[in-house]
Image (cartoon, rainbow, N blue to C red; front, side):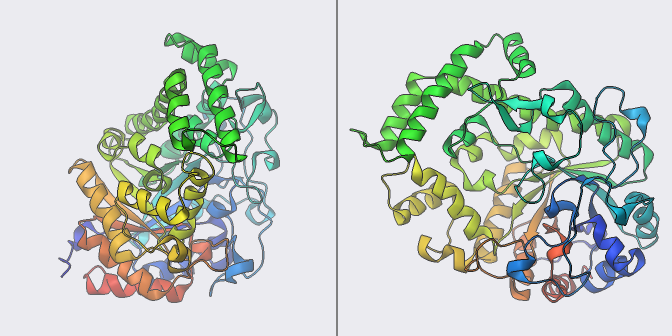
Amino acid sequence: MTEKPNPAEKFVGIQVSPINFIDEGVENLLDILKDRVGVNVLMLGTVSWLGLKTGRSISHKLDGWPDHGVPEPFAMKGGAYFEPDPAYYSGTFIKDYRAKDPEFEGKDILDMVIAPAHERGMKVFIELMEPFFKYTGHGSTNTVDIPNLAQAMEVDIFGRLGSDPSTSHPDYRNWILSMIEDQVRNYDIDGVMWCNERNSPLDTLIQGGAPGDFSTHARREAMERGIDVEACRRALINLYDFVQEAASGKEFADGAFITFIRTLLANPEALIWEKFWLERNKDLDRELYGLVKWCKPGLSFGLNVWNRNHFNIFRRAQWPWEEQTMYADWVKPITYQHQAGEVFTKELGFFQKTILRDFSPDEATAVLYRILGLNEAPYANVIAAGMDPDTYVFGQCADAVKGVNGKAKVFMGLGVDAPRTKPETAKMTPDIAYRSVMATYRAGGHGVVLAPNYASMHLTNLDGVAKALTELGLK
């Protein structure tokens, strides 16, 4: 039996694109979300080049168009969907990043939405994700119309430009700080949701890439901390060579896993670089939290936490919940349950090509499930079955609640029609939505955020959310 939450503390958020308000009308869409679904917090994507964040459905070819909005592709250009104030951008060369989509000419999404949302008792949070440029096909860096952006890119172990801007580059880092200060000071928003989805050097290695960041600015930061940059670079090259050999099928006398450990122990500087990178990555989160609290101490700041953090053994160790409470009022663990089998098997695939190459898929799945505390369908079925709300959502919520130890709220990120990339991936249903909400509160969660974007959600599936909220006394 789920104990009913306090309606006065209700937090039912939804991630929504600016284009949704153009397509469906501000007043109409707010009424649908509030009255039909029970939403009282909007997570509004205000700056992005990612179709997943600020576009229409990116999986319409596989999933069809949802039962609302405009059933046509949106040729999204991306950028800022509010009007940046030039006064805040003196410390960066990235100044003109206003979205140039014709649908938004002369329109400021925050000006459009905040007042009518507040009139309905709904809060408005800005939602931002770094990297802002990602995912080939709907937001990759080389499609972004920002002059000189290439000059701020990461540099890999071989001296080549990477695919993402360097967060150590002062112009790029200052731009992020500027865009958030601009919105916090100039708009009557109620909070900020920040998402950090950067691959670490070790992540990049396991995925078959050449890690960074060895740009001039990152090198300088490392040397200021007494780190031997060249020793770290050489160590990562040695690990890169091992991963490439493992992926190509080379036989190792002691097996791939033992050889990986041996190579890592012989190249400890790789872990020094991983730790340096990780701390600088977390520093950005901490800086943004401090910035928001300096501008408006009472403004809510939360972290949208990557699901890879609970599907990857290294990331699970690197991102403990209690540490994140030092720079967040709340956390939103991403649990896109119907899509989760696809995400997990992709993560497993990277390990299976490299350090877990000598394990069968079933063996590797069982090992990772045990280590990560998962109790889901076996490898052969997990994509088609997805992950069960009563075990997966409940378990991740319970872990987060235990982890934050009363120092932050837990608002579960529940997948509703999260984009599928394979036809065999489990489809969303109203029952999955219903059970996900109920599992959240049963596990001690403090609220929910419906994700990743209203643009792809079916209202019939959102009705499952509404049913749960009604039973819980929140609607």
